[in-house]
Image (cartoon, rainbow, N blue to C red):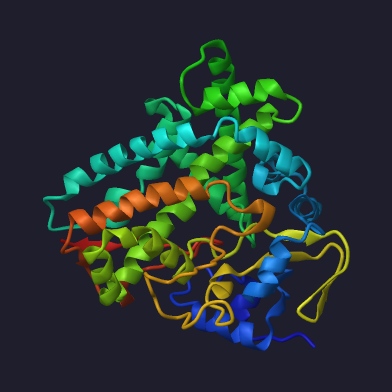
Length: 404
């Protein structure tokens, strides 16, 4: 008999817009840790150990999930775009593509990017240093990912606002539960971004520049049948998407957790060397992505005493796995010194998030600047006044007002 624990969870296990989803996650994890969500039509994996197994099991496929999604909805531009993205590619092609991309996204390019990120963060925070209050999202974080991604790739400055207007609906329309309105907006954005980047690729082939796009085109030339233009566009999308949905939420959720735990914020301010472990604990404690892209079973699979049938969709509920007491002592406590910290905020296995390095670099620089350059920074309203956006997959606020 199916277990029904909370109707909202069965509709969408990422619980978009719920102020505090963690008690619900705990209840499901304790009572039915491999749970069939009837309305969402997929399995939700709630325990850390089960999640590790699922995310590394090659009997589960993201391409097969797209096949099942397309069978239900019909062909969609957003689905076609996803088919060419690295995160939806199965092995062995996935491993081959990742290796080829490593030729362009190397240590030198990441070092140069860090210098650019620090400069852009300095530019973004400078106007805020003399203000008594501001919104961390609207006044600081929102434009930053577009500037970083554009500077790294080499997107012309005059086109960046247009790309930002496309990336948000594109990210919103590819979650666990897809409604008609977000799908229409995502399809429109997918068409526009594909057309834009196709033209940019054509232009850069004719006039190369010293940027990531040129590096990727050089990598493509060594194996054009593996890294097609559609795959290249998928990489461009991933670079922009890494900072927008999850990146902004990553910064804001961690900062809010620090405000709510002033003893931990005091530790970080006293020891900036804790910045990396603070960021990792923020990712564990209140992860920006509540579920990775779903998978579909290629054959019957047993997990946690349940049989996932061939064709069934499966997702991992990261917000639950990251607070599993079997993996994390005292899991509901924020601890900026936590070590080890084997959170799954960026997934695991072959599909560990390609954008994780970029997101970490960007948010580490931004969080460090806010905490160290504004030593009196604190929340500017009651916690109850904060509004969580009902966004599928990403747990994010509409605004984070602060006073200095």
